[in-house]
Image 1 (cartoon, rainbow, N blue to C red):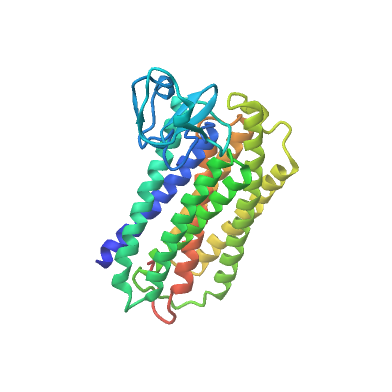
Image 2 (tube, rainbow, N blue to C red):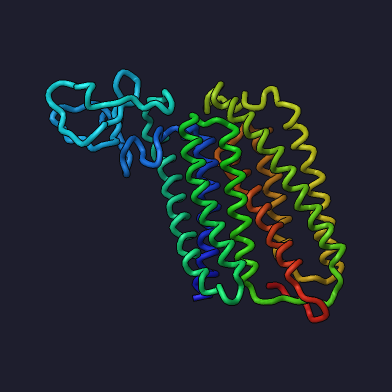
Length: 346
């Protein structure tokens, strides 16, 4: 049961990262309103593939909540009914959350896949929540944090609804991202809690201080990057997805702060990596931290100097999330180790 729980945590973590990636693809392709309602898509569990499917049809059976587009507005079926030969307003009510009423098959299915991956992540976290009770007598924290993960997923789903209802308000998108990182943090903590005990014989006080400082700097960098992303979202809405050369022309001051601050993040992480090697500590995860940092900087260069090539922006966001997770796992490893015995990686 406990092995299944740990495996479930890994699957949940992978799916949450896929949700983060899918969300980034949704934003960069402008597909955020591909499904203008929530949790269904145009009132359907499986969204339409053609615009004609959203036209009113005579002598057609409609289900309560199904959506059609009439005079560039969304109309929602009040109840189950079969239409007659003439359109009757009494069977419909306008969708009042926003006035977005357009259909694009590509955008709709990109957003639908994003929601589908999110639903799979929700199922996975629900399963680990159930499995976590096998730890109740041994480590109650595992049960508590598993419940917190599920509460976080529920709150995240509600946030997704508010993002759609607000017609993609940038601040709500950012809050959505912050909540995703919090869920990642909980899952990584669960993974660390269920790992085999690890130990080492070297005083790691200095490494802990540097590690905490590096993690805090990464959080600051992610925060600044979120502000830059909000600016780019606004630029995408204004210029469209086809004019990427205008998204950072001119670039705001926060972009230059973000770019310069990355050098500080790199320096402290390289220093931490060298300190770990000097003390002969075994933390393979920090090899990945440097690799992620290197690719992250590369995607930043590609976005700025090569006008946001395909996949560069979603990859940049995914790498920032992976960096957050890798550094956090390193800290959990570091603080969970015991003293006065031989070191090995958990």
